[in-house]
Length: 515
Length: 75
Image 1 (cartoon, helix red, strand yellow):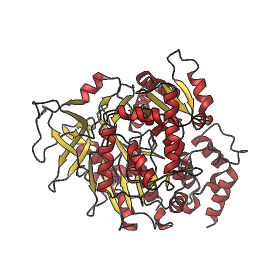
Image 2 (cartoon, chains in turn cyan, blue):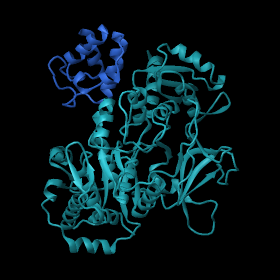
Image 3 (tube, one colour):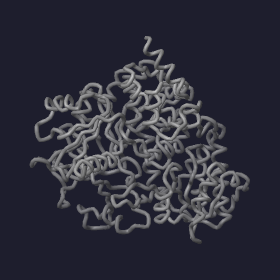
Image 4 (cartoon, one colour):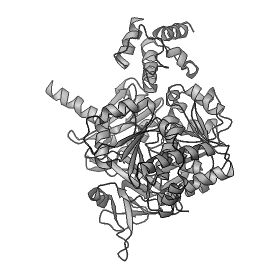
């Protein structure tokens, strides 16, 4: 195998009329999905575009999935653009990606044309999905592209935020995606009977699991309507109506169900597997799920976009107290983890170090950015003999006595306060276990040398929260300030927006200083 | 009713709450807005909202939300 489209074609061959992907209003069988994708590929071929970046500007629908795969038929690679993203940021992405074309649909055509009207002659070609559906499949042309393809060609470039404000495009190849999808399929026994309830957007790395294991296993991808996450009872009823049996969600989404105690009202008779990643899963909310549905498989997955999606995992196999944190477990198959000290030597067993990843999950680098690539994708310092790239995650980890990997926080989240090295994650674990706390985030204000805790739910009186934490944390780890918020801000991926909270606090303090 | 309108205008300003009848289905308020409105209503009116009350119909208009609050206060 060298190309992810072989997954698609294999699934068409086995069960052409089985549902591949559906949302509330539309649905595509495997045969329809392949046909739509091949038409998109043929359209790109007609425009003589191969090996070029193609932006996809569509809502999360089966048609969007067909378009993504269609760019791959055309020998190109895709970047899915969030239609809610401000154009200022989209332009920044385009300045790095330089897309040859942008594929959109009638609903968004006007927006795209308007936004790109001011661009100069390099501006991408605007192609319409609806028109592509009338383009006949160019079998010969597509076969020719496939013959020349190699597994190190790119499938997609996924943009994450860079610390300088310039988005970084992680370039992911067929080999990366196939290695990853094989691991998921085998480890979690994903098969033709699997029905994914997809929560994460297609421009977020977690959706790679939903999409490509669906393809690899001939499973079914049910796109869950985003609005239903505000109406959790309806959400669960909808999932039952689509017979969803496997979910891979961000912890914030699982916590909505737990905080509302929705499983007290609606049961999920089809559900089998609950996977999560993207941020730390609060144990209190996980314990609610486990109490209600003890027979399910729960797994904590960990990894950055730069390793395709995931490099370590832990299948929950014992009880955890609300104040404990889940381990991230061990390396995925065909993926190796190295823990390095700051001087580039290997950490001793149990010692804290930076997690680095080796193997076929590791992406090629940042698109069009050799400097940032060289800073994060480095020669394995333990191997001076031949070229071998590893990815430095910037995350601090160590092994516990059971031989399980523990995530301790971002290298940049480890702070030094009152002479102690502190992981903000520990402060959050303590506060998150307090009764009625729905979610919490701890930040460190360097200027004022102060730990600040933001929390939702829990004691209305912020002093009460402080007193509560005195019983749980040593003095040097206690937040200097506790701030109760009505709701946690979320970023585009549905995760808690830490950056916003930090800038909010800085503004708040600066405002006070002036006023 | 004024307290409720104050809440709504605070959570998401710039919407004609008095006249709009399809706040949810026309996507004038999103899922996070609904969650915030729920929290604010619980705090302001001292009622307990159950997940079974958090359905689109109860949030489509200011009247619908008001009726929900009235019903919960009677309980």
